[in-house]
Amino acid sequence: MQTHWVGHFTHQKRLTLNIAVILVTLACMYPGISQASVNDSFTQARQLAQLSEYIAVDYVEAVRDGQVINNDEYQEMPEFSQLIVTKVSTI
Image (cartoon, rainbow, N blue to C red; front, top):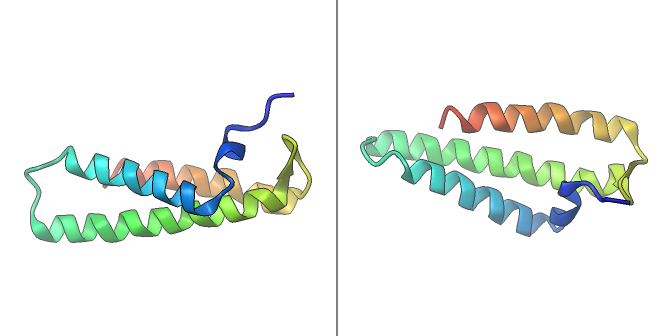
């Protein structure tokens, strides 16, 4: 049985670090932005990292061995994941 890709990131600090690296990399792709934009982008990136951490913590409570065991917890994850994807594209 193939495990869900998020299962590889159940350790919340690793997930948070990976998301932070991705967000910082994306922010560096736009070198012509002002310091105020950088600060705002950093704040948004930090909030997205915290949301990612929240998903990671809940994932271990919602999914086991690739199967959903707590549907209520799991239902939040696609919504929050989509929010992250949407917000990352605006940073």
